[in-house]
Structures are given as structure tokens and as C-alpha cells.
Image (tube, rainbow, N blue to C red; front, side, top):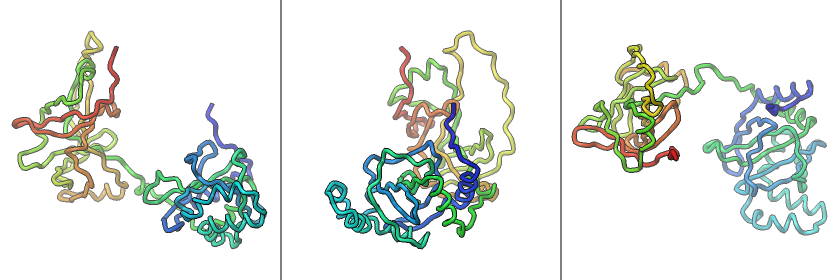
Length: 327
């Protein structure tokens, strides 16, 4: 059974109001970060985050903060702040110093300076917002957990923010850049080893170093292009491919020929930019396609390697085999 978040009608309305205004970007400790709505079943935080309880306008809110957001000197003395039997008011002052950048942001959003205390991490609130670094979305800098009343309060605080809207043309699409398609039996695939060279039938790389690729969208070839010096040039559009008859199944499963795509990377671009692709257009890939080769079977990467030249032919030297050996 799938564990889905459960909301009362009032909570659902507040969650919808908040979700429509996220993600929102702001500055924190000299970094550009964004707040993202998080489902109740997911919590992605390293164990060394600092947990505190924030009280604002009568609401209790759990906050987990990455140490890079706090002053280094404060992080160094954090164990002393949490362990010493300090007076409650003195501890609140020390915590406010440690979390001053976050406190400024909270005060900016709700007009109220929060009060900090140590959080009971064993208690879990059902709703949460995740704080991510904009330039590195996999870096989780914080988590804000709140109960139903806190959800309504935060939704009210964010009501003045514009509603985030997306268009179909902004949806990211993946273009596979394919230099060849080869056929290997299961037995041949099982025997692949590091250092092997697989010769390609098509002359994919010419003598002056230009690489010819087909750009596939959702399994259908749309464009023909060339790559030289980490830059891709669109050569032509491909309307459709000729239908190819499929052979009858062989008697042995090991002799079944699998379609193996030899890819040199993927491009992700919004549909709006895809519509504007034109013959002669040059795109900056940002990576060396010759050293970024993947062998895929039904979309699954089974090996990685690099392009090499053997006499007048192009080959793929395998560097990493991602298949387990049959016993």
C-alpha cells in the first residue's frame, strides 16, 4: 500500500495555496537557495544537521539547518550550546546569534523575530518544506517541519507571493545523441570485459574529428547533427525512419539479438527551445562527447567507455561494465 500524505479539508486548502507559490528563491548565508514543498513521506537530511525548535506567532516549527549556513565559530561551539545547563533566556540569545541569517529571513517573511530553543528530534510534524541550494539542487541545506496550524500560518505569510506557473513549452525534454546502434547476443553481452573494443559498422567519426549523431526524442529520431570540439551543430531534420521487419525468435534465448544503443550523452531542453532548432544552429554541450559513451539496452546502461579509432573504423573501448557475470 502506498503511504500518501493525509490532509483534512482545511489543511488541503492551505497546502494547495502554499504549493502554488513554491518553489521560491531567496538568499541565505550568501547563497541562493529555494524553498520546495515536500511530501510527508520523504525526509532527505544528513545526520549532522543542526536541529532547533522555532517559535513564531505562537507556532512551533522544527528547523534542521546545514552547518554551512551557520557561522563556523558558532558551529564549533554548538555542542557547548546544547550541552551546558544554560538559562533558557541565555540559550535563546546564543541560538539567535548562531541562526541570525535564518532569523532575518523569517522576520522578513512574517514580520516577527523568531524565538529558538532545542528541538525534540523524536517528534515528527506532518508537513515540511525543503531548502535546496539553487546551483546544486542535490545539496539539502535545511528542512522546515510544521503542524496543521503552522501550515496555515506559513500559507498565509506566503499569500502575497506570486503564483508559480509553468507552460507546456517549459517542460524539459530529453534528447538522446546516438552515434550508432549495434546488435549483440546475450552471450556476447555477457562476455564483455574492460579493455574490449567494439567496432562500429557506421563511420561515425570522420578523419577531421567531426562526429555524426542522430538526436532521438522519446525513441524517435528527430534531427541529424555533428559534434566537433564539444559543440553540436544541427544538420537536418529527420521526418521518419524506414520500418524494419523483426526476425523470428531464435531457438535459444542466448542467441536473441538485443538492440544496443551507443550514446554519447543527452541534451535536456524545454520544448520552446526544441521548436526553435534550425539547420546550422550550434549548441554548446559542455562536455567531451568522445569520453562520455554509454551502451544502453532498453534504456539501461550496461557499460561505459570512450571512442577510439582502429585503422579507418571507429570503436568503443569499454571502461566500466555494469553487468553481473552469469554463474
